[in-house]
Image 1 (cartoon, rainbow, N blue to C red):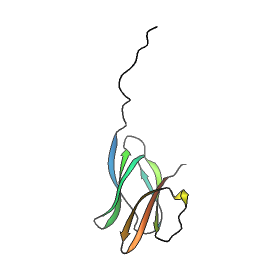
Image 2 (cartoon, rainbow, N blue to C red):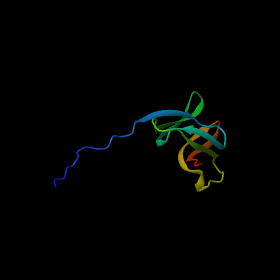
Image 3 (cartoon, helix red, strand yellow):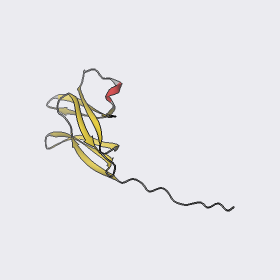
Image 4 (tube, rainbow, N blue to C red):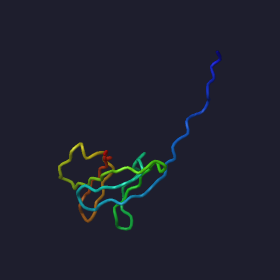
Length: 102
């Protein structure tokens, strides 16, 4: 029996860059967004904290939480993945993201 090999690769999922708002205070904040491939940048735009992420736009949205902490606040591993730090009004905000599984 002759073996047949396919040359090529599987079709990649389409990724799109989206911008999302971030809180400017501390706490937990819920956000619904397409599955995250990568977080690109956290910054201030039009005087508001935002982040840009590459997401899989063709997949259904998922639930995430953004956790915002000021310097000196207690951090727990369960808060998720660090995505960036911004200084807003003299306070330093550190942002983390985690997916919420239901």
